[in-house]
Length: 187
Image 1 (cartoon, one colour):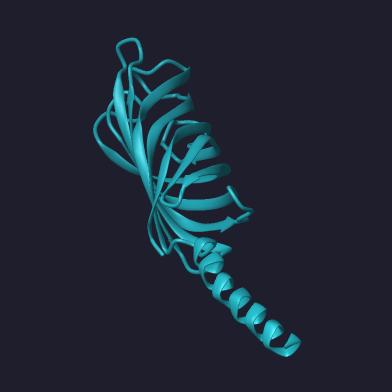
Image 2 (cartoon, helix red, strand yellow):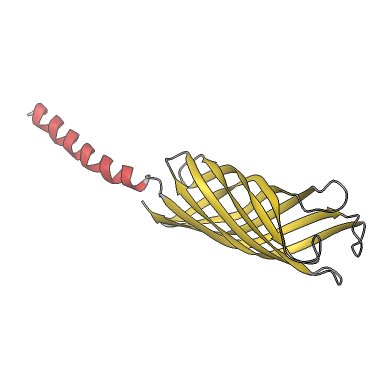
């Protein structure tokens, strides 16, 4: 009788483990969208631009992450910024790609990433006219899981380095912040 009860309890436990494991599986594909803010720090020695300028860029963007496993993913980040800057207004579009490390702990998923790529600038941020330049971002955030397919990212902070020709060092140390929601698309 006790052997039958033990076998029955073991089968019941195995029946529960499958659904519990399915709930904690990592989504293979995640999409993020939100508001982006960048603080561009440009020290220029270019005719027609102020010698030192900090520009606030406001816009939106998104990320697509493919999770290779529970810890590591590959991220693509696209963002557009409008820079209303006292007669020098312009825009920028960044395209960055790279690895992300995730630490999945229940409803919290802190992560860090290093993204490399470029930034397309229009007049008002760098040289006149649209130009492509190198860019990189190093940063992270925490996703708060709301439901099986939805997470909230209250703030993502990044060091955002650009290589826009400015007549001096041709390197800008910027900050970028974003906030939005992440959709977990497939399991």
